[in-house]
Length: 129
Image 1 (cartoon, rainbow, N blue to C red):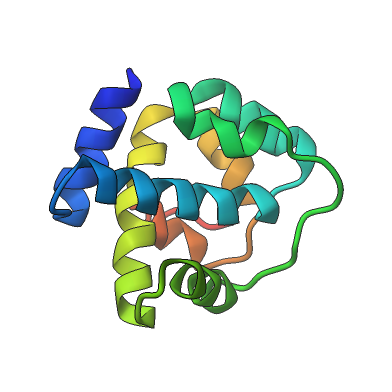
Image 2 (image 1 turned 120 degrees about the horizontal axis):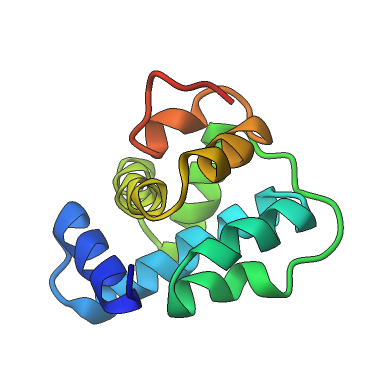
């Protein structure tokens, strides 16, 4: 998938006004996710994402932050200046696009590092982390 298509999908799912808004939300959500993953897994995920979507994962090092889904969404809300409900919408728009952009094995690896509840944000409620 090309980066333009990735952003177009995020924009459609999130019902954002323009590409700039979709790109800002995407960068924020992926930045929070990158800090939540162990460095090796972050690099693996980034390798499957297009263009600037891979940027937050490329330089990831150190231990993962331990964030529950609630804490993850609070971090997204804080960084975007949105409400908790909007942060959930934003995270789902971006993460479901990620899920559609990577292999099933990679998605399973990512979800395996995350506590239960994250699979819903990736649009895969039947999977558990």
